Image (cartoon, rainbow, N blue to C red; front, top):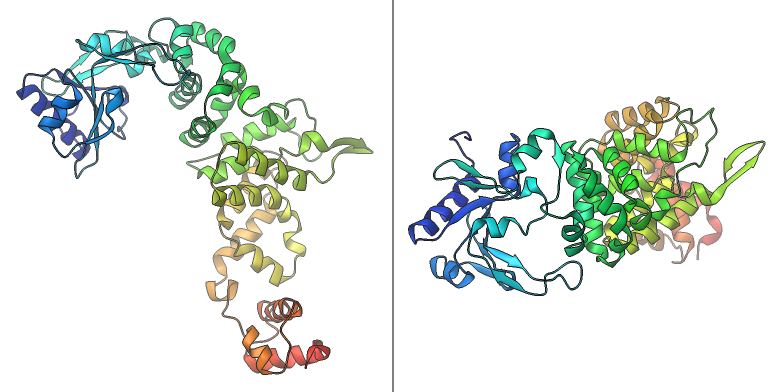
Length: 444
């Protein structure tokens, strides 16, 4: 059924299946890897499901890791990549809307499949006979490009509420239609997503943004009612009008969707920067001679920081996202900046993300890329040693020439660097002469 050549990860999983079979245990590849192979996609990982208990798996693979053993999952290490081996099981009640209260080992692969989330993820593949086992109609749903839960949608989504976000992610990623019954179930259960941990919600949002297509994902988040629950600040972008002379595309929501549509394999920070770049517009909206959003960048940066904290983003990621929001309007002043200011802007950590956000911002509004091209050309044509040259003076040099350490040092050294970046001075002697001329009162 599938091509005979296989990558090293699939070969590793196949060998695990072969070993389990040789000991008399049923074993198959399961889940996303089977779905991806049927869709002609390269799986990221290969998982195995088996009739062997965790203890029996450990006996056959003594180097295996027992990280998920309480849920019947053993990790078998392999140089090609770890393989997750899960015992057939049927889950008991889900007490917290995320984890089953008890795990009962199943006797058949069908019993195991029927406790899974979506039909397209409930497929089994026997790599030894090259046969797909489909107990839930997953192949028909792939052909119909339909995302459907296994069994009753309300029951399946209530068991693990994160599945609501996963449904949106899968439907968007594969351009599948969300089954009407599943859509209605998510609308009914959407408020319960608040009980899911922020980290889990964050991971799904980032995947929706970065696995593509992000616009379709956020439109579906809105249709299901999940957007208002997980990102109410983004929901409030809807209906916020913008000056038509700058934004002929429509309101802030439409503008943001258009930018999301333009994302191509973005980093999480760029994707979230795009999503949040205008989050400060709704609270700063006013009409005086025209529509205005006074101070929306500063307000938006503060809101972005709060949202990142709520989603448990790392400190490093948070700072980058806040910078993207705070600095996204700086490009409008780029032609009028001093060269020293331009170069400092270009050498910001992650400037390529700032540049890409600006490009998407322009293409999703007035479509004038003049400043983008100016900054891009300057970045490409300016040697690294000119963008960030070695300092001509340091604090020790100032002390050696009789300057008292203190807050003025920062101003003096920045003045020297400005002159260096602008090409007015080129060596230590010229730098010292500049300092003596402009800061004579700071000498001891």
